[in-house]
Image (cartoon, rainbow, N blue to C red; front, side, top):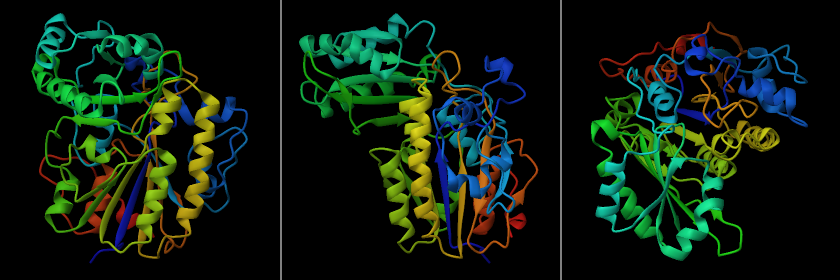
Length: 396
């Protein structure tokens, strides 16, 4: 018999809570996304995360632990070999990724790949290097507008990204080019985790701005996940934000794309007012995309404050038979060198209005405790070969 009718898993994308033991192997010694934001931001006021127990889990400058935290909390360490979006989310749902996805941040994409992309799309490629989305538009947006050439770039993550102006390049054309790029990068030696369409608007001698019509073309998960089993058993599996893209639609019954993290939390609040049985899986991406990669401490802090305010309104909507799990998929310390994700532990905060109390749980050596707990709640057996141990019986 299920304990909770609805489970909400909300991923605060990149909100790491301190470097993992193996962080030196990833070049991330001393990274601490949340801790360093609390230290260096002009202000950080997150009363709802605080009362759930975030400062009990991880000491924060200016934000003290509470005597009676509302949530159960623990650190989760990533078992898989990586620190990217797909690896983190796939592990949450039970997959152990031992072989990291290909990255091309040091060299750009191989000439052979670029020539095939140009031949099949009919467009010349410019860029082909690692860069932030705003920097590449500042550098090459005018060129793309003038010539119709295609901006291709990557990052420290396993991605091939293509920019296109919505008014001159066109969304349909951008998506067509990305579909071709996804097909090309299915070859083992070029296999990136995601191809991402990055549409933008703006005119010559004006400011370029990326739009919400981004679309991710991800690899299919390398095995069945908790999402697949929930769906197979007739349960609702609702995605908010880029979750559907991360899992390439596998195991999803209904999807809601988001324009921003604020919009994503508003959508999740709206779903709390609806009747469903199963999982709502939300990703709030702006922490990572807008602030972490751009190394903007105050921007990240402001996003946290906005999300915390919405969290307070969301908590008021929860029923006694609802469970909320708040977590992250990796770190992205805005005080750290470079612009890459950081190999960090992530939070696990679990709350239901029906709980008598909260408190600390023993740290987990994987993120898959989430998928295992959700599956356990609904009496669903996790797929063969997956990892993760449920903590459902500890949530009282």
